Amino acid sequence: MTIDVSALPVPARRVLSADAPAPLRAMAAKGVIPGLRPGDLVTVVALLAADADAELARVAGETLRKLPAPVLTGALASDLEPEIIELLAEGYGTEPEVVEKLLRLPRIGDGALERLATMATERTGELIATNEELMLAHPVAIEKLYLNKRVRMSTADRLLELAVRNGLELSIPAFKEAAAAIKNELIMEAMDEPSPDDVLFNDTDRIAQSVGGDDADDTHEADDEGEEKLKDKFLPLYAQLAQMTVTQKIRRAMLGTAADRMLLVRDANRLVAAAAVQSPAMRESEAERIAASRMVGEDVLRIIAQNREFTRNYQVKLNLVTNPRTPFSFASRLISHLRDGDLRSLARSKNVAGAVGKAAKQQIDRKTAGKKG
Image (cartoon, rainbow, N blue to C red; front, top):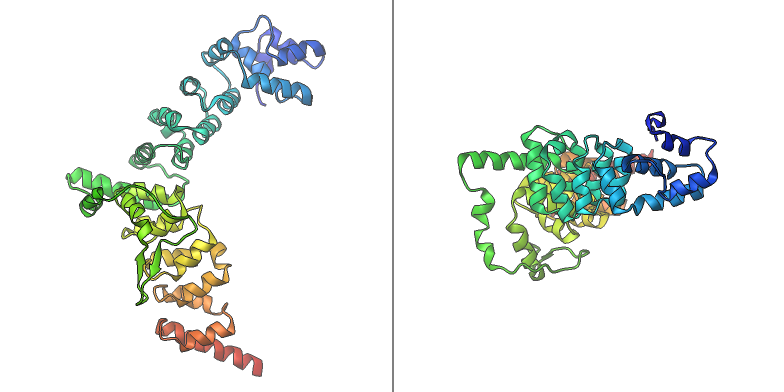
C-alpha cells in the first residue's frame, strides 16, 4: 500500500514500526489498539492485512471483514484513504447501509466503485446509480453496473441514458448500438412520438410471460419448405422480448441466455441484432447456427465473419460461405479455407449465390493446376 505511515498518530506508528513487539502487533491485528480513532484503527488493521507475516496478515484480514459496528461506523465517518475504502468496499459491498456511507466518502475512487458495482445487488445497485455526479466522474461504475445481471433493467437503462446525454464513451460490448438506440429514443421523446416498439408490440400484452426452452436449443426450426419459423415453446419468450425497448433488448442480448440471443439476433432492429451477435457470452455453437440462418441480416453475418475466434471453427466458415445472405466480399475470403469435397458441392449447388459457386469452382481449378504443376 502507498499510505504515508508518518502521517498516522503515534500509537499507529508504534504498531507499524519494524521493531514493534510481536504481542503488540498481534493484538493490533485483532483490532485492539488503545488510543486510536476508528479511522486510524481500520487503517492500521488494513496495513497489517498486507504484512509479510502470513499469520498476522490472515488475522488482520479476518478482523477487517468483521469490524464491530461502532468501529466501522466511526471509520466511515472519517476521511479514509482510497485504498482503505476499496478494502471496505470488498468486505461490505453487499450491505446497503455500509454502501450508502462508502459512497459519501470524499476520496472514493475507481477501485472501490468498480468493486461495489461488480458486487451490487438490486438494492445496492440502485444506491450507486442514483449518485449521478459520482457516476459521471467514474464511468467504470456505469460499465460494471450495466453488466451486472442483478441490477434492474430500468437502472441500467437510466445509467446508459446518463452516459449518452453527457457524451461518455463506455467500454461495454455493443455500446455503439446501445448509444444509437438511446439517441433515437431521445429524438422521439423530443418530438413527443411513440417509438416503433410501442406501435409494433402493443398486442403482445395478451401473450403469456413465462420463458421456455433449453439454453442449448435453437429458437427456430425449418418447415417442410425449408423456411425458418419460431418454435412454439419459444412464443412466450418472444412476447417478453417484444415488449422491451431497443435499449432493454440490447442489454438482454449482452447478459441473457442463448435462447435470448437466438431470438434477438433475428430482431428487425439492426442495432439489437448486431448487439446480440457481439455478446461476450456467445459460444461457437451459437455462431454455427447463426451463420447458417437465412433470417439474420448481413450485418450479423459480417460481424461473425470478422470474428477470428468464430472463424477458426470450420463449420462456421462453411456456413458463412453457404449462406446466400453473407456479403460476397467476406464469403470469398473463406473459400480458400474449405475442403475439396465442400468446394465441389458448392460449385454444383443451386442454393448458394452464383458468385460463390463460381469462386468455389475457380478454387478447385487453382488447386488442380497446382497439383499438375
